Amino acid sequence: MTAVDFLKKRDSNGLRSGGNFPVIAASTALKSFGSGLINSYVTLYFVELGGSAFSFGLTAALASLIGCICFLLGGLIADYYGRRRIMFIAAFYGGFSALLFAVIKDWRLFALVYIVATFASISGPASSATVADSIPPKKRAAGIASLQVISSLPVAVALLMGGWIMNEYGVLDGFRLACIFTSVFSFLSALVIFYFLKETWQKSDKGRLRDWLKLPHQLSSSLKGLICSYALVAFANGAVASYYILYATKVIGLTPLQWAPIVSIQFLVTLLKIPGAWVSDNVGKRKVMIVSLLACAPCAIMFALSRSFLQALISVLFVTATGIFYTPVYEALQANLTPKATRGRILALWQLTTSLATIPGTIAGGFLFEAVDPALPFYLFSIAEVIAAFFIISFVQEPDKKEP
Image 1: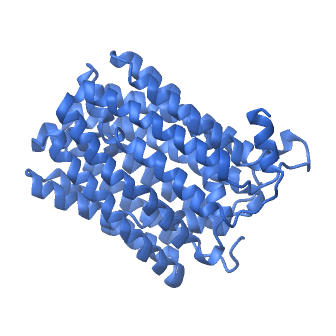
Image 2: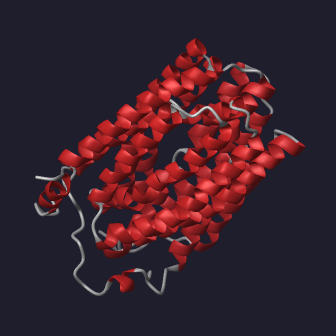
Image 3: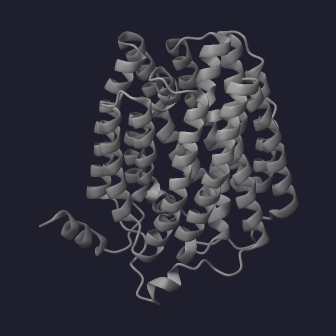
């Protein structure tokens, strides 16, 4: 029996998604541990190879542009063909990409492979749709938050290991060694999906494929406002995400080994997502999102003003503790507003707008960091967060009836 035949047989067993949560949690935890070994150090490695902050910003922007195409295609696949197979294939592709990172010694070639590796994001809509399909609507925010916490806890350990590896072997050799471990954990994640994940959406036999390329003609004003708010958050994060470690090492004066416990503790703080999501399920998701955005906005400025390990640690913890509630609550509210039959494509639209917003954010952050003032990307983050809160206040309302 071939792998494709086995997948078809598994898909034909029905849409029994009740046991998917522990499977998704295990697969995500494995993948997150592997990626956690290298993700926080990619920019630093890129600069060590001879690149610059601005050239990495352009690289990340091009990768996001490729991601836009992948999200659209991935949303179509998720709603028309099903979720599971594309998740399995993308996980294996991610493992091979990490192996390529381990053998590259030129920043230009690294940039090319970094961009090509983005094709793995084609599974994004399918993964998000499977999570939403597998959790009851009344517990959706808490379920999504729990899953994100489960995936974050291994990252806290992985970051420390990654920092130790690069301290022992140097940034260049250490990063390459960490990439090998990343590849192994990505392959293990794919195997968990292959053997245990149940399909949650049957291949559609209604209508022609070209009809499925169309999104619903009318999106609710709440859904539009929600997507716009997240696009602003994506712009804000794009402006700073790749430059935290550069600011920590170049301006504050920390070493990679000193930065590792900061980001490790940061991921431990994500445990707060669970009580925050519980609150949102009971008192309202919209209120929690507004508070999260307005509280997080000034915390990035605190980081820009830091000049010691302790100040950097405290400011990063504040950024995390205030901002972590937004994404799981957002995903739950978006799922509640989206019919199951179109969930993959709506998720693709969300991820598309996220990528499109990240592109100018990453470029602007890199330019400001390198050519103007390294602190300015963090001020830009704060402004964008406040505007995102305005969109939710003005346009988003909770639905009277939640979609299953």
